[in-house]
Amino acid sequence: MIGTIVEGLRNKDPETLKRLYATDIVSFDIEPPLQHVGIDAKLKNWAPVFTSFEQVNYEVRDLTLTVGGDVAFGHAFGRLSGTLKNGAAMSGMWVRVTYCLRKIDGTWLIVHDQVSVPLDIASGKGVVDLDP
Image 1 (cartoon, rainbow, N blue to C red):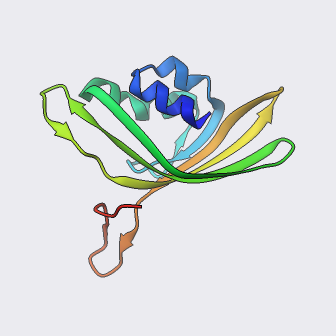
Image 2: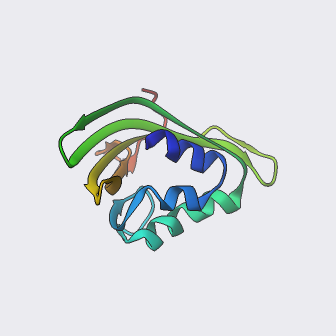
């Protein structure tokens, strides 16, 4: 499933992504608001990637999954990068990603995800120049 997220982003294909998420997904992404609820909100959150980038790359590192009978969770590092439509290259930044999955009617779906960056407490700003 995580590989399919990578493919969907690289192909700028929201329909591929839509098949991976539960309709009532709750997503805590890096962009406001604090939470995105439902598949439409999740796809709306990905929309700027498809409209801003000419070429999209998404990397996942150190993926770890724990799978039970009908519930699974995992964590990894992810980095979105590519070429913007204006031709500028964007190297992206590494973020921390957590996935929570449930088997619903025999199909694994992402029911929750969270993306974050470390916080520098003294400045109150996210730290975006770290590598895994």
